[in-house]
Length: 353
Image (tube, rainbow, N blue to C red; front, side, top):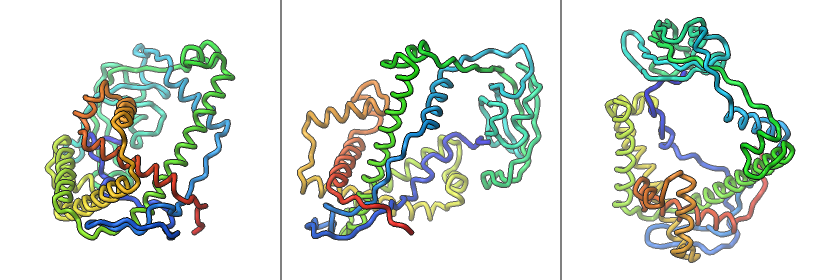
């Protein structure tokens, strides 16, 4: 059961930057260098390519089931007690050894197996408006602070619902699709979309692999101290805000969300992450300047509009205000350079280990 404080694990993995697979053999490309960094090779690097996953009939059927579920018909079942297969809305407060660890409102699908052992079964037979307690035990594989401990959940049933899936027919297709008119056309469109997603995933993998090779080929001769400090302070502020959102002292947040990390260790890790961020930024700026990749004002406006749609903002100005124009530009520049590096790399088959 995932009842940790809200957002407690968000960004918890950001302290560890994963190393993507790739090779870094030189092929005679000119190096880039300035007072801060040196890139031994950035053009024509060898990078592992990902195979484009095949779209199977099972994939298409699974996607269709997702569409049917998204358009499911919800039925009120408040006139009877909870039974297997129901979706139950509850208010809950969880305590362990007399201390509250979480509370809120939750939708529970009975029989899904998503909750801790005994929780879903414990709701069966209760009715809307009924309040009761469940006495359970967290599994040993649960989060360290609660693993194996007793738990008492005070629960009130708010509603009981069931759902039925609509029939997959031409009328349903016309209701949910902009262009397909028949079930057969719908299936073909889904297969095409899944194929495009797989192609995009393979391309993204190549871009990440090629860019990691470039970073491996990059040596920072001198870190701009101001940039490193700004990145570090921003990261620390972000985590402290998360701690505050969860109603925890910073030290307690680190202990719970970062596997017992101390503030001293966090400061050290934040410095490493800040330096890696600055290293990447320096490499991006140098390659953009060398290869003249700066976007025109019109191109930048078009990309900003794409980002607006991608992130779901009402306007570009609202997006800039929320995310920050500098952060958006940094991401756009990184994406531009990664695309160029991948376009100019040498894709190679994945090496066997």
